[in-house]
Image (cartoon, rainbow, N blue to C red; front, top):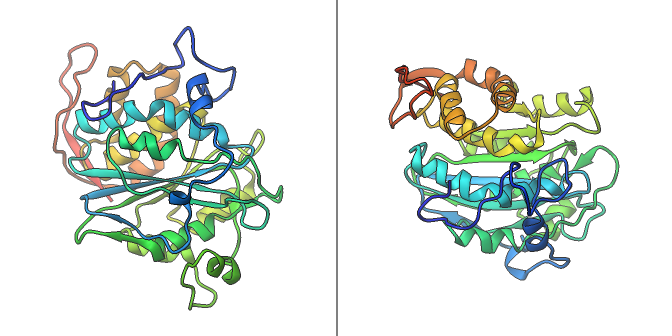
Length: 318
């Protein structure tokens, strides 16, 4: 299901070979490809500005601490499908993607890793530079706030662009930006007591989403509340099945771009062969977001329903 601009082998959880025993469904290929132990200089955040001229820049921030590193592998495996679906379903017409990695700036060697915006197969080059450090400090917090502040200060977008930022992880941000940490990464930090998520939300028209994985076997109240206090509550979206992470991102993009409602996005999921269990889980996770979006006219084509029934083309926008 890759797009014409992004063709490589796509692995799926139904494959008979090539997959590891990970509950996330990551393949042995991605385990091999994402195996760096030291950071490439091009991924260092120090003084780095990332720039996009696209209509819709997409930033995917991956928590690469110990409990979350397989998400990066799943994203690698499914990126041709993700990219191809955006193109084929015309969710977006002009986009590029930057992959960033976050850890714990108090304990990790590489708590911020920043890739340039790229398109098509060039994305593989950047994904393969990620260091899956598997660190973290064990205090139910990672340096998401420092990453949010970096993205606020060190990204440049075209006028009238519509950026979308995804955070993927299972812990809470620290309460405030540590100024000495920001300065160590050459992130200009003249403000005191900054609220980085408020600043980032303002910069990208509130299109910031936290895709929250379980911490252990649940979503602890302190972690869930910490995110809902910093974002529009419906933008804190629970990951009910790890392998559904790309389905969730596609659904958010489709609804934010006004090319699908949740109901019509469900049709797309069925058309690409997702199970009923996956469809129901993704729908439940996206329901609050769907309810918050104002109806508008959809653009683009919708995949036909399996029984040939006509589908209603309504759309929504934040």
